[in-house]
Image 1 (tube, rainbow, N blue to C red):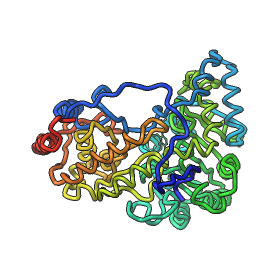
Image 2: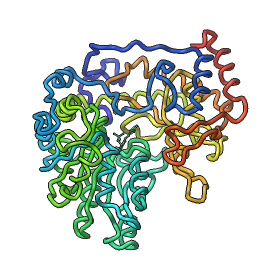
Image 3: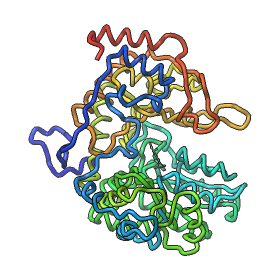
Length: 485
Ligand code: F0G
């Protein structure tokens, strides 16, 4: 079911076959475990603060680091540089209209810039914004405007071992109760995030989108769709929902788009370029947001983006409607997830989009949440293989106003699989080193803050290990792999 790739192996093996060839490469380096230990300590045990020269496989994110196609590079040469009225803007507007079927487009320099515009336009102090799950920047920007995010995720969404096809769905009963309690006038908007990032890249079903849209329209509440992770979500709708098996990807996007009032996206993900934007067919909503574009971003025809990236995005959106393009990431994620599972490593299932999510709460059960188990595991994965993942747990939360911790509902380390970047041998290397770490998991200890910024602390915070567990882990690695690689 997961593997839509039409090529079957005679041997029966389930291998994610690449439907592209690599024509430009970047030299990589694998530092020794001693160098990795030094680099991790210099980076304050925060994978965001590592330098690329110290990283072998950069699995921090897929944001802005997906491989682009030759057609995207070619389009960049044709970009029309201009402060106002650029032809590039109209080409991108046309591509977006073709893709989503919405009438108006507001450009923004990346996804969170679109979120900033939407929050600035629609969130008032005391408002409630229900959503399937928050994303870090979304929540920070809504909170900044005086709003409160309420998560109305589906049952089992946060249980990493439960297998359900659409764990990103909103829970309709919780949504109705939330709107009932607050009153519809206090709801700034309802937000659905495609490919729910922080619960492990889990998709939202078309049926759920229909139900939420129907409810919001009856109550007069705008429905906002975060389409940043739509490519993977689209793949899962196409392959997991029997109703969509015979529909084209374009038809599915149009169908879901009609259910939404505002759609925004990070084009660092959707369309494999760098940038972002907002589309809507509602003139009043468009006008409420428009003034923020020149204020925060740049003139209305570039919104802080380079025109070259806008051209690449237009092509990338069209390529998103090719199943052999969008199946690559989920198939590689599944290959990594299966290899890890075979070694007993706890991972989020079913395998979702964006990356393979290792469940730190089950991997390092002995580390309490106050010692950041996912942060510690992220540091340990780097020590084990020069692999840079991202903490998606308590470190990524914010403290409450009284200074107490908000313990995250999930403690995950995300090993992102940027689109068409890694080879299968590199994926196997990741599984091997994380498997080694799992065998030695009792050596992993916790972390404590040395420097803690008050907002989005996971970006710049610096931590130190509690005790000398990292030296012990490095020594064990050298005993098993004497060349330190
Ligand atoms: N919404 C979702 C679902 C995202 O995953 C992201 C970014 C954003 C909004 C913000 O977009 O980065 O262009 O400003 N996610 C990246 C990640 C950072 O690594 O998952 P942005």
